[in-house]
Image (cartoon, rainbow, N blue to C red):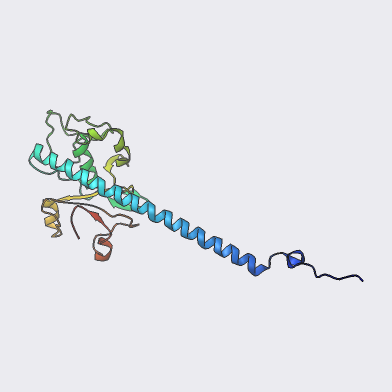
Length: 210
């Protein structure tokens, strides 16, 4: 007598459409979670990098003040550059760059070079104006700190955007001073500059406590 056997389910039709869609959905969810985790880690790393830069810039500005009797004041505080499809205020970043690298002096208001030469533009060579180089001990690690945008050298945060820097005299005119000496901050992971929205300001990375 011949026994009949039923074909296995796999031999009959393989995976059903629902099963395939389920597997694809799980893979998609895992991919999203992985990408989200990577992006979060990148933001944390950039935030930590920015905090370290702010601390170092604080040290450089303290040394500048001791050598010159005052903190540097941006010559063009309202200057701006376009980065990542947004316009960012860059006058303070250009002033910071010259003050800590000794490369040019024309972005520092009223600054008279010690070597007797007239104020000059930045060239990209640290110490080219004969002034103090407050970042010289950083050697090659400062390459990502500075960028030439539209013929203006600026100091960058860990997100690749211009640092915001306003000394006491300029900031008091706006009645927005947070620090007794100067305000130095990064907009952090914000996709556009923000100055008035208090909720967004909490995302800034600053040299003062919120």
